[in-house]
Image (tube, rainbow, N blue to C red; front, side, top):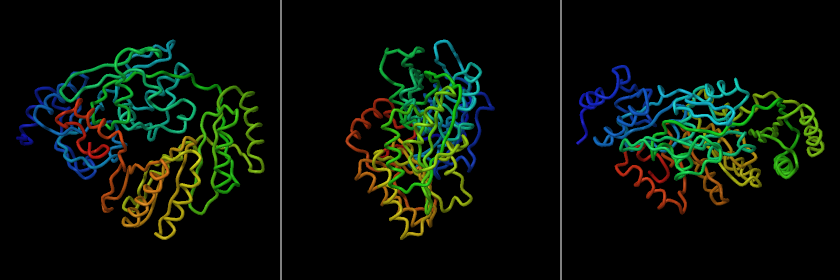
Length: 422
C-alpha cells in the first residue's frame, strides 16, 4: 500500500540531506500529473539508494535534469517523485589527449562545452536549450541537432555509461577509450529510452577538435521543389559540409542553410563549389544563429494555441511532407513553420485552435507513417484532445516490453510515458 506523504519524506531523510528533499510545486507537474516530492541526491550512491527505496515502496519515479524536455512523451500514469540529477553536475575526467570525457548526468551541455573548449575540443552535439539541457536528459531523449549530419547521432558519440537501475543497482558499460568493445552495449540501449529503463548517472563521450574556422551560408530564391533538389544535390556532391538544413515557413520561400568548417582556403573552395551547385539561387553569408532555428520554434507568446512536434521522413520526401502540411493546414486555419535537417529529421511548430491542432497533427502523422516517417508530439496545449505522443510502435514493441520488464519489472521509472504506454 502506498505510503502517506509524511511517511515517504521520513523514509528518504534517512538517505538524503534535509536540503535535498522538498515538496513539488504546481509548476513541476509532469504533463498535468502532480508529483509529491522532488529529491536531489548529491552523488550516484545516494541516487541509487533513493531508487531502491522507491522501488521497494512501489513509488513512481520521473527522472529530471534541466526540465527542458519534461513535456516530451505521454503523460505519466502516476508520479510520486521527481528524481533530479541537478547536483550530479561534475566533469569527472577529461583526458584531452585521448579525445574523451567522463561527465555526470546533471552537467549542462553548455557547461561541458565551455570546459572542453579550453583544450580546443567539443562534444559534436547541438541539442535544444544547451544552457539548461543536461547530459542525462539529452541522452534520454536522444536530442541532437544539425551537427548530426557530419558527426552522427548520440549513439555514435557515447562510448560508456553508468546507470542506476530501479532496484538500486549501479551498472556500468563501455569504457574510456574510443575503440572500447567490452560488455553489453548499455549506452546505446538507454539513449532515447526516455528514462524508462534506468537513470543515467554519468556518461563517457568521444570528442572532436574545434574547427579552425566556420562559415554559414544561406541559399534563397527557390521554390519547394527546387529546395528539395538542392538538398539532394548537395548531399550527393563531394562537398565536406558539416550541417545542412532547410527553413520553411507558411507563405514564404524556403531557405537552405549550409555550414562549412576547416581552413580558410578549404572553406573558400567549398563555397565556390556550392555556388556552382546552387545555380541561379543566390548564396549569401549567414549568421551562426541560423542553426538555432529549431530552438526558435519553441518560443511561444500564447501556449494555449501552440504545438511542437518532431517529425521524420526520408530525405527525398521532405517536399512531399511539406506539401501535405500545406494542404491540411489551409482548411483548418493553422499557421506553421518548420526546420528540416538533411537527414530527414524536422521540427514543426503549429499555431491554431486546439481542435484544429489535433486534426492537423493526426492527419500529418497518418501521412508520414504511410511514407515511412513518424511524428512525435513534444508539446501541446492542455486543452487539446488527447493524442498519443508517439504514434505506431512498429514490430519492435514485444521486444521493447521485454527489455522494460527485465530492467524495471515493477514499472517504477516513468510509467506510461514511452511508446505504447511503456
